[in-house]
Length: 290
Length: 290
Image (cartoon, rainbow over all chains, first blue to last red; front, side, top):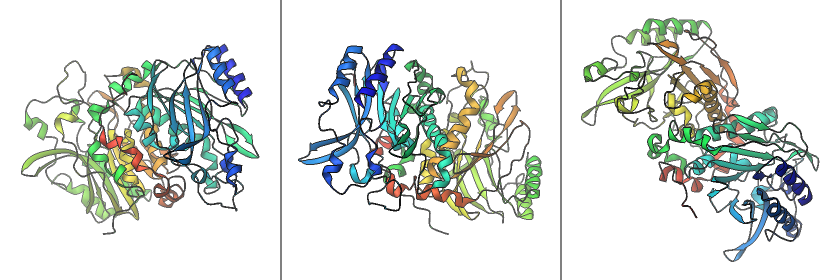
């Protein structure tokens, strides 16, 4: 995997890129599709050090090429005196320094083994909910944020970063073509993927870079459809294959300004007092019948 | 105006409709495009009673046809011991009863006269921010909500109704083709209009019915583009003219269920603790530079 990533990174450098965004859980398979009983079988997929012995060459190559990157991986860490596991992404600058870390908050799927499924979706079993909020940092000449996969379907994700002035949201995703709980929506996977990223971009005046694993992984078809989306909500670059594919865009962060300063000038137009239900209520509660 | 609305209502009845949705400020012109110095010139556009003498025939015809309707208008009311003005919409059932009222929360535009504009957008001058939240009520066999125009661009609007289990969001809008503060985005008016309503529908598993004034009103071109949007996010009916035009769809509210019960089962998948910034912060605040 590291070899493949280095190959793509060199390709990107050849196209003048400053920054490469890799998918969610880019170093391993999307292992939450399998139920493992033994913790050691799960731990096999987790990184304890970043960079570690296997990933150091990726960092070294980035420094050599003077290129930054964002990558997702499974993170195991001892924190608060206990073993913890997160679905994590990091942003690495051109000098090889980790300048931001995010731990996935919206874990989809289920926690219990559901043997009737051809593929599990056990993120709620193998990971804790992230504890770093959605960080936005100064890097690459702008304000850079991250989220992961299912986060992109939730407008709250983009808004928390929008409220920090984010100018580029980077995210990786692993979305199967087939969703067993609602197979009638499988035909809409591509549409929904772009719909949520495009509206998140427009409604916060930010670039969104969504990067998929694609094709067949361990017998599971993934939707692919990686896209680079402007603050206008328009897709400016899009993958069209299910193989390793580089897409490139020149992302002028100043294109965020007209939105942040006019229609989505939050300081003038938001009404936070009216949004309290968003934090005070978790599940939907219909009004009482009259 | 009432005559035009009655004509459209009869047309709708002929197509088997149970419910008609009319635009924002449907009884008058979109008067916030003009600066008036005298309060009596502003008050001319406001309703003090609903129904009042001019609007009673609309209610009478709805009862006769056994059809419900949603309509927007400028509301003047004495409340809390003072004169107050809101940009309001109401939902009227088949027996002519007002079963829900909404007062617009996201007032766009500006409060001061900007003489350099060909058209003003003085909603912040002529209206107060609504004080009825976004109500969701049992009516027409489901859970019905309302918002108005600019509200539709803010994901918080849909989410507050989604948290009440909303199955149909009705909204009217008056969106000019030309937006003086950011004319470079005029080409995207139609795209943004549908993007925000489609994502709001999908992300909350609800129908969205967006109804525009269209064509040329007092020299101002409006985008039109009324649409009926399914909980899948797909547009199932759409206006294609800038005249008075009826679009019809059979809206099966049960199509909301698969979304509300799987991918957007809020009780299982939302993380409200992580959303606090949405209510604790109004304007965007970038992180400090390192």
